[in-house]
Length: 536
Image 1 (cartoon, one colour):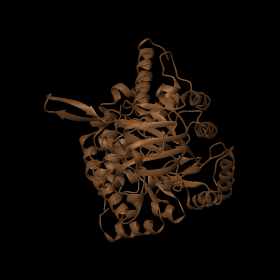
Image 2 (cartoon, rainbow, N blue to C red):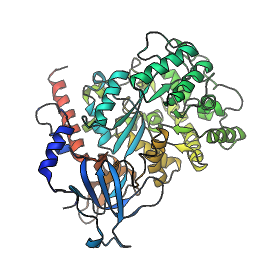
Image 3 (tube, rainbow, N blue to C red):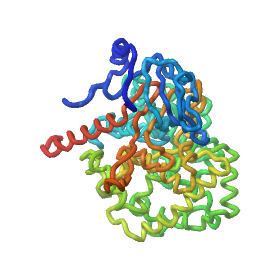
Image 4 (spheres, one colour):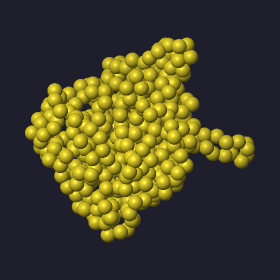
């Protein structure tokens, strides 16, 4: 049957799998590792797929794809114009033949801004995050800040690389001052800190709007040591006792210093302003109050930021010349323009833990839970300004700029995995063709991380990272949600669900995405029972 596991010499491979996938599932009733993942195999053949290769080229097929260990070694076109296959044209069997006849295969998705949630904030171990990502086809993540600590995150990254943990591949980015005995408050201290975290194993830096001399030192030293740099350009705030603000470091300032990529949108509208150098903040604004912060931010794209203006074009052209990458995380801000919809997303019932739902409730003490007095007026400002941001992203892409997909999930009703798919939908809303959306989720992300030679497209010689879905995702990106998409059957006069990722493959290891999402549901149900019983 379609999608069934068919194996040759499975007994020997099962022993190898048991040694490779050392994984502990919580609680009685959890599925064994072998029921969720298999491989890598000496030789695997994925049979009869339509290929969406990540370059934004059109789908093509049917293909048989040969994977040896963790690499693509052959892609053979086996179907004619009508998808008819001649058996004699097909590659020899593998240790695993995966029947994906008529399914669609894409490169593994890259989420270029995540935070691995702490157990005290989800009520569940890190594998809860990992499974939600794997269940949505995400095979690589940029951990933007390593909030669980550098040492912990590096250890997780290395365990994932050894197939000891079921999780996406992790790129560890760290914030200035982490694991350092004193504040980073001078250029020399900045360089010393960068050398220190490089020795600890960091892959990159997660920066803020540091004073120019310190920002220059951080970026320069990182590049000397082969580390990438990304930034959340704070509108204001304190980082390691340094005042940092986009008033002294907007996106153009940072790009000129060599910053590799930009997270969110902070610093971009400020660079586009024509009548002043800072937004027109409310004069009673308190930046420590998130309600004030995001209330006023909803107006930034409406304040003399004119699409198509000379300033608009000048900023865009300079960023293009600098080969700068934008990582917008638009879905993380959608709740600002439609809080009720995000709060009532259909997946929360089955896939959000009790602790998450508690943390997400509006509360001035919780970052991201600023909706304790959120009004129609605030949403209207965000709703009207949002299209200008999306227009900038689409124009930047059209002129040759790199836009990568990321979601920044975890706080205030933005659930891991699900919010990433919503990010892809918002890029489509911005004007990206569905094929360009997939490119943002794959090739662009790999290039931003500096691994475009290994990941991001489906081609011979690259690492075998794939997403396989049994419905055409280009026709409806909603089929990528684990909850699938609705369809109507007129003969039965009923609606039903289609889609959901079928298989996620990372470095040749095949994950049963639907079984993994079933395990997430089990974890959530168990957490609900513990909460109902009064357990911590």
